Length: 620
View 1 (cartoon, rainbow, N blue to C red):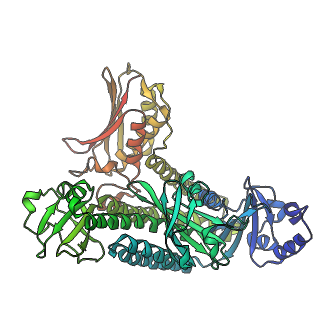
View 2 (view 1 turned 30 degrees about the vertical axis):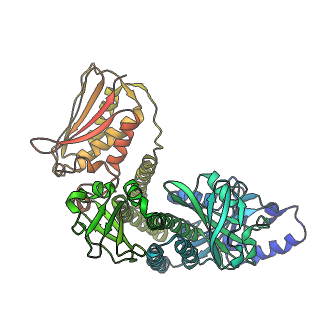
View 3 (view 1 turned 120 degrees about the horizontal axis):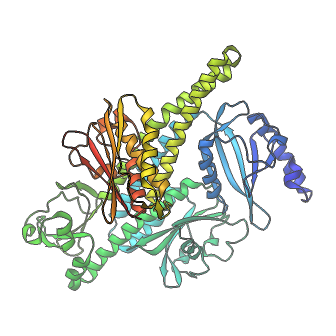
């Protein structure tokens, strides 16, 4: 078994084989094509499959719904990183095991990737979940404290030094530093845990890790020194250096510098990379603020031009807290002109000088992040504020998505787990009819899970503008009639009618994408008409467009929500979400599919109650 994976090696490999054979943890290795290369006795004991069952095959122990996670982890560690994650794997008897899996790249002696190695450990899922939540909460609190402290610094040099100290504090790095990108050179401008004499050292951008990162199109990466690639680097002054993680900081959407986190003792995983990436983003904001304030202090004669050109709202307050200057961006953000506010307090609370950002919601619903600092040698304060509405909404959307998706997944998973457990424990005591019923229930719930995952994947592709559609003429009338015929038997409470002209011209677009759109609109019409009623699919053409409508007699759409329902994770009001379920991606995907074909989707309320969904597609 091990010979297949390690043949042709020197005698030291015999020791390696013995270690793997006798290891108490399940160890498996994957080849570049993701089939099993190595399967030790502990893996056989844990999962029930012998080496002959799995060697050379894609492992049968990964549940279908977790395949995407498995492949994502392998891709994450392809370049030599390390990922530890909690997941489930299947035993040969069908039961699911709660595991913690450590995955690393499998490298040859030249440092080239041959595949991956995974070590599996049993873990208590509830305890691990609680620990994970508590750890994430601790990290979020710590990140908030670090960012607040970083933003409280007023001059550029202090911000740079605080950034280096913050990254060691937050990521647990043994040392760290910040390099500026200066044309084709890098310059080390701040550091923590390294000799002071390194400050100011330069390096060539093109041959550096920063250059490699910029060329990859990513914002964060990890490199290891197993192949000796760290020799000659500035960072080689750290004894025992084995891993470097770095992330880009941007100002005005351009790379300004990079943060380096250096490790010589502790292991490094994807959590450190995520924290470094977050810190790099906040560092860009802190640097932007610090540079803006330095410019105001250093070039007072040009302050009006600098302030007026800023994309942030900037105001100068006198000793009494009254506005003396109010730039155009402040007017755009608040709707209050300089004439209206001069000589008065700002139309929002102002934090103390040097205090962390204060967040305030304006009457128009826009969120502002407000920062205040004193002007050196002047009895004035400068407040900098920006629109953080998108970030706030994203934060709320993520929380809502996690809560909703967890709710939607819980029921089918619980049912599948319950019936599968019943079959496993009581198979011989069940009749054939009871077994078939249980298997049918598992299949139906697995189908529900599959549809949910497919919707999540479509939503992800739509959000990244990666929906693949074709463009060509197709028979729209046939698509509509087929969809209606498929939905008619699904509900005894609804009457589904069609109003499709026999001479409806062909549409230009993608028949499959259009079928998905119509199916989602019909599903919503049934779902939001809980008392039944008539659902009508209609179509009409003009010289340029074909209009498709789906009418229902359901609960309708709340005033003001006719556009909002097409956003991600939105599904009417909270009461509707609890009543009808779902993750709020259906109409978002529908609109993106329609627009990808050159059309659009909109919603209107019907005068007599209910909703009309309108799909517009170009004529062929």
